[in-house]
Length: 360
Image 1 (cartoon, rainbow, N blue to C red):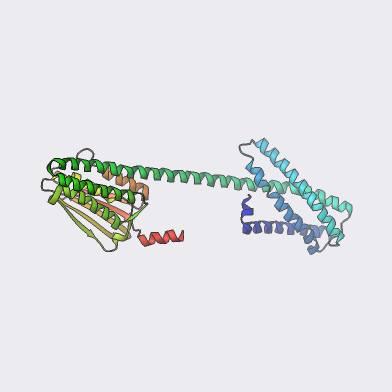
Image 2: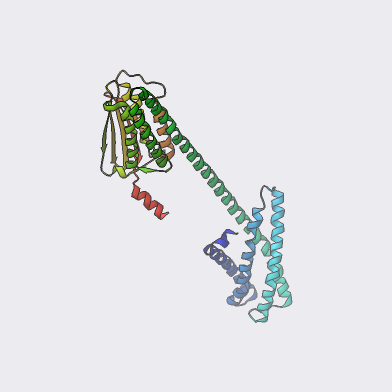
């Protein structure tokens, strides 16, 4: 369907434009025939509106142009213009005869034929102009369609990458947990059993949260608590946890499974490397329109980084780049016997998200 026919308002504007053109032609007719402008307008303006509707057919003509050569395009334009002008003359001649019979503007047979010839000649360039305008509209529409397809492809690629990154979390964590369970089987069978139960509960929770686009920080921290319950079986009193969550921060939205790999990284490469263990400190605060999350763990000053320590951090960094490249970042620092990871995210609260959904 022609775009104008889908929008009554635009169609009205289009026909009004043709009515203005018809008024100009009516003025010329009134002057040349020394006739009242109202009579000339009553004859000419309806004819121009009919031609305006005929020129809409140029939309389907340009849609069939494709990759035609200039010669083919010219031939198609001329053929369509001649056919359109012939149709216009065929519809306009009875109207001129009717107006003459009703006394609106007296026209003899010769004048009717002369008028029909004039309409045929004028109709050719008018249709050509319509073809040109429709062609430009078609080109612009094709460009927008191509841009839309590119954006859809980018979104699909981004979602696929996010799913791939999320899929890395469970196998990475599962590998470490199975090693922990294996270490407990011989020395603490009951602890290994509890750890298996906690692991099953944790994995069910990750599946539920990982399928969502965003979760509240409170839900993410709840998942982290389940992770600590698993590792507590292994480390006992060697693993301490401190949380400093400012009021209101727990309602902010974050990408799912964002803190867990950072906490896992802190346990594996911080606490597990120290005989005396240590404390993992988790902080959250909203400052200057940004949510700042931090995960800090104690490390020995003489500890040398081992291969593979950056998997969790790199995973989180890449997810942040895809979710909000300009508004989110990950920073790391090692000083005073502690390693700290700081996440900075734009503030989005759960009520705001619900409002967006409702308004959309």
